[in-house]
Length: 195
Image (tube, rainbow, N blue to C red; front, top):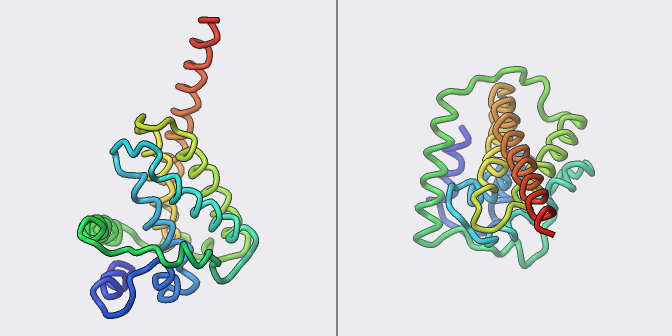
């Protein structure tokens, strides 16, 4: 199971960097890294734009997925990002609990749809839309939470090969992007009337 593999890597010997995570999970590393990186903006906490770096990395990875790359490429500097430390460890432990919960609920539903060229392209495009929604959310608004959570759930749905989790992810991420659009449009009209 994914949670067991992730826990074994976290508690085992060796570096705990983004690059080491990529090396361990191979072809599945795209989805695993998307889960780890987008889980931070998915927290219902105002981040003040601090998560934009993670979102930029996710956008780069999604473009690689669309391009059909089998192995993920990241700049050396990004590969050295540490995933350990007391706060990060607590965060990763909470993420492991979420993954375990989803693993208990999930079943392989429509598994034939996953890990195909066209489904990877679609996965990448959906990640770009939801990540862009999280990226453009105003700082300290909390509006990045739902699109980011959509990416996390979508990635877990792909890893667990469960179309039901993917559909839930689309609803959550779509609701977040729609909410941003509606509130942004209302704010634009309000500001326009002031002038």
